[in-house]
Length: 344
Ligand code: MG
Image 1: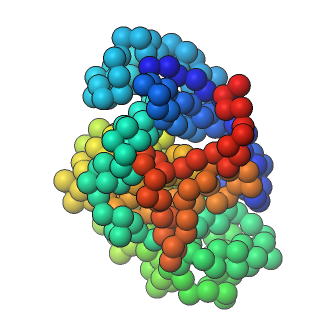
Image 2: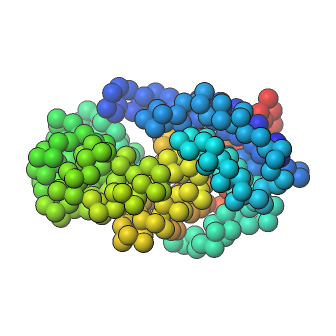
């Protein structure tokens, strides 16, 4: 098995205003695992929040000794070795994991959703994320999101009520709220109560990630379901946080790959929690990986590839607001420009 990789800079359609500044581009890394004449493609999207950078991903990938692994069918051994050697490098592990599964799907000539024995007619509708924006921008973005039946709104600002009122003056679509740890306990209680009759499906991460007592306190007092995102990174974190929440946001990059995300989803379900598969700003490689296993979850939030102008890959479609995978084997994606000297 051989691994090669490249840096890719993705340009955002709209600069994303979030806590702590404006984001105009995102750095991801695309990797290829080649073995036996077949190439599996993977992607790592390092998140500074979780302590990863493009440099740390490359350091992990350079440190992996693939010569000790005979072929991608020994996935389990490779996965366990990587988890032991690089416990915190979840995006780096995810890149390898995605490439291995793409290889396996291609080798067995099945799309990944079938490899995982799933029914793609159960892929849930995806939300479309709207970041902080002025009132005019907000209205424009809501119109741009017309193909999506659900909006995801970032709150945790001083004008949260204005944002929701603006949206409600334009559309009555269901909303998912993500506060990204932006509220205090009392503020969260007051704002979530106010949101209860605004057609909101649930609230993501209202309080600081370590404030599990606060989330449990809040859960007792509000009707809307509370979802853990930052509070639950690794699948095993779900053992610690399950009582304080009603649902969990699973991401392939924070879990450590497709297999780890499936583990997280199953564990969350075993605790009676609802589940959502979400993403970062990613190309169609990582989004496809999530879309293939999205029949396992209650909710999907897989819009990362639609928020960029220069996705180097294609293969996904949007069908009735659902991010739909193709029937090609593996991830079912390919380079837009086949003449590209890939990885050079
Ligand atoms: Mg979130």
